[in-house]
Image (cartoon, rainbow, N blue to C red; front, side, top):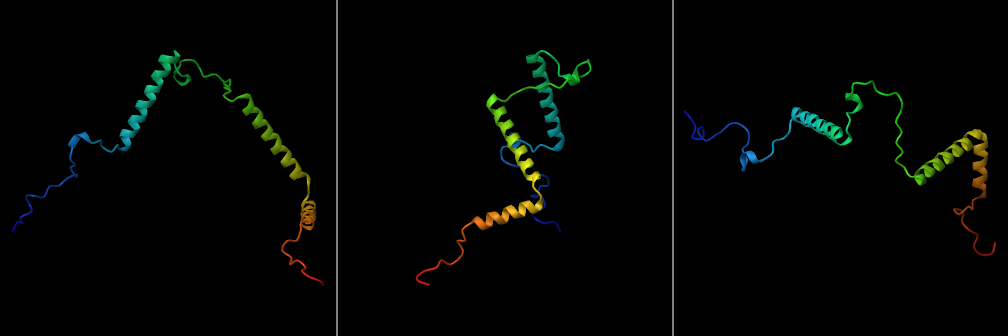
Length: 125
């Protein structure tokens, strides 16, 4: 005995309005192909605008000399150098004291603090 709904039921994926116009979800293979396509485009741009091939594609062996490109301003370089100097001084200062000396200095600091948790004396006596 067949049901009244047998001829109405369709199997398969959900069909949305608009049909083929909607973008499909990219699978892993399609994403990988897109990345290869992007790399190829970047390579072509480099060849056309720079006029040479990247080092990894040229016939000559890669150079062993490091290429240093300075992209920071003089103020940025001075700031970083000052930070490095402060950090060196801080490390030197910390390494110069033993644990016992640090504890003694901390105790002296605590003694010099006002004891604001104590109840102040009010009135005569």
